[in-house]
Structure formats: C-alpha cells, structure tokens
Length: 105
Figure 1 (cartoon, helix red, strand yellow):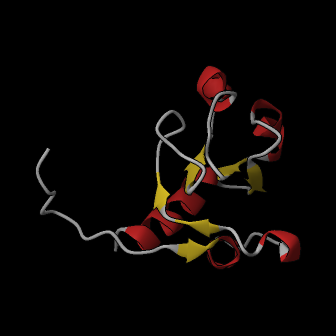
Figure 2 (cartoon, helix red, strand yellow):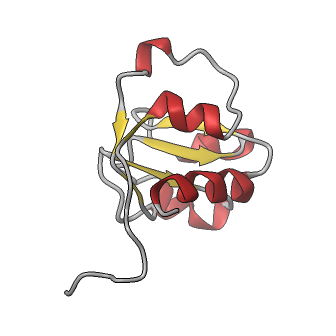
C-alpha cells in the first residue's frame, strides 16, 4: 500500500510521557522505560503500541490484544491481558484524542 499523504506520524514516546499527557495519576517508575511506537486498534496493536478499550462489546478483541498499554476505564481493565499496562481514566475518548494528537498532530 502507498504512503498516506494526509498525516505525518510522530513518535515514539515513553509511556510515562503519554500518561502525563492524559493526566493519568500513577507511579510508573518501574514501567517508564516502555517506549510506545504507535496508536493502534485492539486487534492490530503489537507490543510496541498503545490502544484503547471503551466498551465491553470489544472484550473478545481486548482479551487477545498484544498492545503494550491500553487506555480504558477501571471497570474494563478485567478484559485486558495481564501483560498489558492499563491506563484507567474517567473519559476514555478524551484520553484517546489527546494520545492520538501526539502521534498524528
């Protein structure tokens, strides 16, 4: 497939920088070395990507995601693999907007 001329992808970003941008309040000292290379869907994410989960309707995809981190709500963290770093926020879509703007300004 050809190059997409509509946007220029930026990054990678350390996970703690993304967490700060979405006002995620937790001590990520042990995980601050994780570098996130892209923002992908649950089913396309790799261990270098961040994704999001905002509805239990997508739990079949979320349980199988390979994403390094996922933006979600506290109620939906149970539908993510243990190895996936869970960024629980009040408003998932607002956090997704902020994160996607980092990668695709």
